Image (cartoon, rainbow, N blue to C red; front, side, top):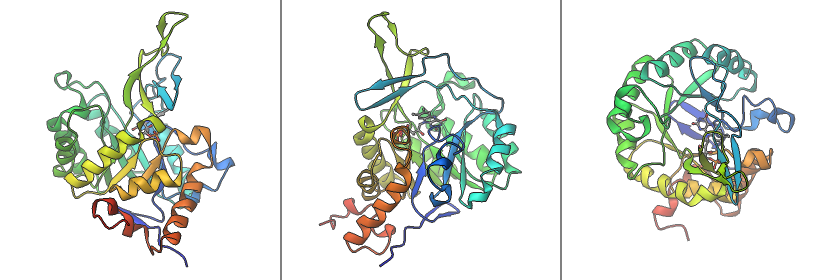
Amino acid sequence: MTVDLSVKIGKLILKNPVMPASGCFGYGEEYARFFNLSRLGAIVVKGTTMRPRPGNKPPRIAETPAGILNAIGLQNPGAEEARLRIGQLAGYGIPVIVNVAGNSKEEYLQVIQTLEKEEAASAYEINVSCPNIKAGGLSFGTDPGVIYELVSLLRAATKKTLIVKLSPNVTDITPLARAAEDAGADALSLINTLVGTAIDIQKRRPLLGNVTGGLSGPAVKPVALHFVWQVSDAVKLPVIGMGGISSAEDAVEFLLAGASAVAIGTANFVNPLVCPEVIDGIAAYLQENNFNSVGEIIGLAKKGKAG
Ligand SMILES: Cc1cc2nc3c(=O)[nH]c(=O)nc-3n(C[C@H](O)[C@H](O)[C@H](O)COP(=O)(O)O)c2cc1C
């Protein structure tokens, strides 16, 4: 028996619900040596700003007992160069989701305007987890009013699928999710990394050049699952769940908690084959448990019918 793994995210039909998370897969070049990227549900590329960014000073990664802290600082080649690299992914025949970042609303808009012309760019994932913005020193990710304004502006600029990536570094995520929905987002993705730091006790200095970084990997999974559960209850939009997924079982947890698709970040650094393994593992889980389609298990843990 074959199972239907396809899911709908905005205007995108993904043939399966698995994609790499932004910033953990580059433009796929290194991973293409390990498996055929056309197996993925979608590919998500690095956060793209208007101009190239060299990123933060090193060290940029610190290992933690169950994950990593990263402070890459949005290193990327800039929107024009990103457009060329995205174009090269067209041959894989899968949607390319471009993660978009900026220091101002105008910069997000400019990035989208630059990429609108690129047919291979199927959707945008708006990273509203950047700490700084011109507007009154408010952070994009923590103010529902700022999210509403930003997403409204971008919505007017594109008909492509608009996904808003939410920050977990807030007390209550639901007003932020609703602001994105009200402004016309097609989907939400969560979570981005959790703010953290680490100290080198020999040097008696912060381990990261940037002092603070973002925690990802298995350590954040329960937090991510909680947010996915909460947000998928609060809005009607499909949710792409991520945070600590490193196996099919982890991915199934996110689907059962209400995610319509999943993204895998840090685990790619440990196992470059994790994405295809998770795709196969989800299919096996569905078959073993007599489900015909992945859609049947989305949010099922909330419905009290899981046994
Ligand atoms: C090295 C690194 C770079 C990242 N770069 C980005 C980025 O450019 N844009 C973004 O929205 N998220 C970025 N993230 C966050 C991931 O996409 C993901 O949301 C987070 O790591 C949680 O998933 P994980 O635990 O599977 O890694 C980055 C994460 C890591 C570890």
